Image 1: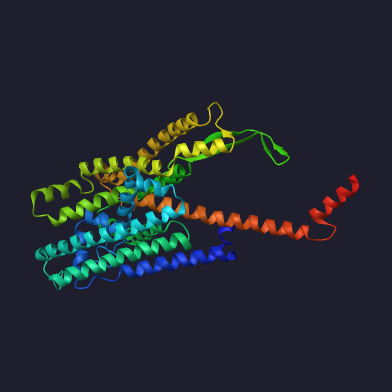
Image 2: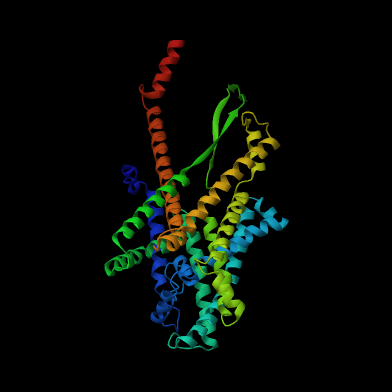
Length: 452
């Protein structure tokens, strides 16, 4: 494996994509340290740090620490994710959006454009709510803002919206010209960037006596065990056996072949926890604007990570988005039709409708297992905090995202290496065939002369 990755620099396209991805991620991390005008970043950092594991801490995690610095990227990529959720739901409800999905790349481009418009609209709304929230915070913590007038509101909304749109653009550029999924990589880069601070915080707790050596070793063991568990589940597949009938292509008759249809156990990937977190952050942001109202206070308390009501809602959303995402990405009717056109069938299952029902049953079972797996991993930090008294910062949702995105990126790199291997093999064959009496072509000629 190490030998394969050592050859990355030998492939020009892979080297270019890797450098392009790293460059845009560096641009993102530099932008995190650019603060919104008229905001005291030191005071804001104290407020977010004092929130602990609350909703501000969760939002700060997904923005890569941009919130505690009140950066131009304080909204993160969440407006884009929220807009994507809305468009996916509209595809189920509205027939016009469903027709766009069936128009191929042209329809997908239109959906992407509508998603961008939705991102701008949500960024404007969230930017206004955050500006109002900062003004309210300034009343309790004087010195947070230099100016609280209408100019500050407009400038904050414009800055945060521009930052969110720029991050959306970065993610799309990475996806198209770089390696891996750009949106997921931006979130992952933000999480990894806070890992050194989490390690230092754990060391400080151990050094001060707040955490024992046993707790540190237990934390390390659980982190390694959960990482191994995530890698195992993300690599798990359900292989549906396929049988190909005899086919006649030209003058040749191809015999029956046995293959399989690989179905990932967790086909939804990291989308459910990301969607669920984004779905919970938005109403919490609105509730913070009405924090003086009893309803706003109750809502904020319900959406506080660690609260049992938050856990129930979070698990429910994870399960819902698991099924929702799989249903939008895996159409059993289309797959059954494609198998029938390819003269393939599942042994013991009739082609067509029966095959679609069988695949739907298999995917339902897999999705149930995947939703349980995702929910357990995501609520694990709350369980450790409540029953073991250990704060597992780099765990749960963040660990799932980092490991899953890392596996996807490594898989894409391996695909490029495999493609390079086959290309080199093809060139070798062509070179051999273009030679003299030796090689493949030479042997074919000799065999032909002997037959004659």
